[in-house]
Amino acid sequence: MAGRRGALIVLEGVDRAGKSTQGRRLVEALRADGHRADLLRFPERTTEIGRLIGSYLVKEKNLEDHTVHLLFSANRWEHVPLMKEKLHQGITLVVDRYAFSGVAFTSAKEVILASAAERGNFGNERYENSSFQEKVLQSFSRLMKDKTLNWKTMDASKSIEDLHREIKSIAEETMQEVQNKPLGELWK
Ligand code: NYM
Ligand code: MG
Image 1 (cartoon, rainbow, N blue to C red):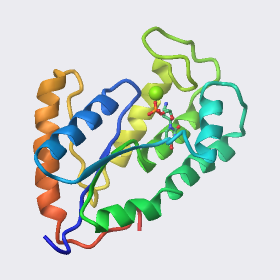
Image 2 (spheres, protein in one colour):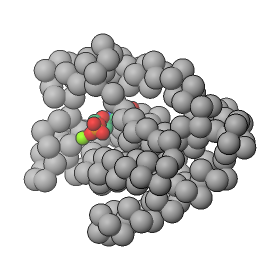
Image 3 (cartoon, rainbow, N blue to C red):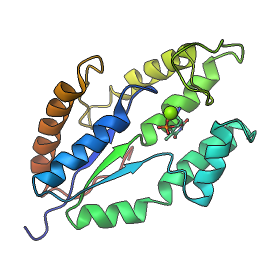
């Protein structure tokens, strides 16, 4: 097993798509099968930067748009050394949102008017309304045209169990595929 690296598996999508549920299930299942796997999420609200982001999201704090964008980015970068170390050690990382959310949510801001009405079903954080999420989805669709990344689209209306089985088999395939490949760099 020496030298085999872990896979970086990123779950992206609009709010309430089921990413967190599936991420947790995936890590549990991989571990149960004897793989080494860790779950990460972004924003990771427990660091100093993450606490700033958290207070922005719950509307306790106002931050200028570029500033908050860079905080989200910094919040990922502060975890990159640890992520690389784990991947090199053979630990597969399941990540609940990554830089794609960074692009999709910030770019959705550029096109949305502040007048978007709050709708049902979402929570009370910033961005949690259907017109904003619609823009986010369009932005994700553009990002998925990048064929250097191995995107798989999931139908989030399926049952938790069915989705879990699909995601697990994709994850296992990916772990096999990348185990002897060097780590790549995103958008380079
Ligand atoms: N979000 C998340 C961003 O706006 N930019 C980012 O870079 C990331 C990683 O944070 N509505 C947004 C998307 C979500 C919000 O995320 C909180 P979560 O997964 O609901 O905790
Ligand atoms: Mg949320």
